[in-house]
Image 1: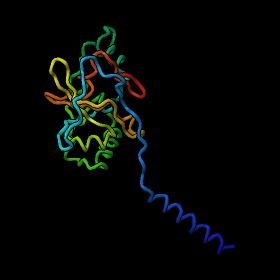
Image 2 (image 1 turned 90 degrees about the vertical axis):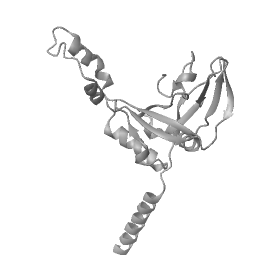
Image 3 (image 1 turned 120 degrees about the horizontal axis):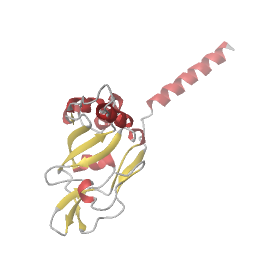
Image 4 (image 1 turned 180 degrees about the horizontal axis):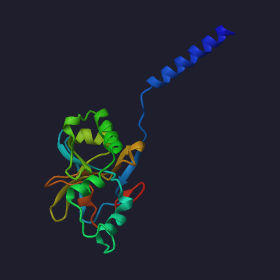
Length: 201
């Protein structure tokens, strides 16, 4: 009886050990998509894989549900905090993303070869900044970036949708690719809407 129990225990231990060594397979979901190309824009094709894209990640902010209460505290004459307006640093601190959100997204980026040295945090604490090649960005977000041209002659880089791991959907607000001449999503949305799996931007 003891021998059987020993073998059963060893079998369970080995099964548990093997289960722990199975690589974590990310399940992705569409985070944002553009269903229609805005009027006046046409695709000019894909981008060189080694081109650089300045990527910005908006992290989910904290305490947004308390925003109205905070505003009333400083604006209502009967409040003990009336007139005590916040500094920019306090606003950033109060609404900063949680450390768990920052850590989760940084860990995901690192697992895809984006070293911590390449990632910086905005002064507002709500954005992560990094430069990625087109190839890195397309693999990371399971998407395809293209160059679009407006009938006015303006050109922009954008994708029609991108994906992130399901477990990060509550940590990431949106991705944005931006510099002085390149913007993803925002500049192409025109009068159309950008849809999120949970909410529209």
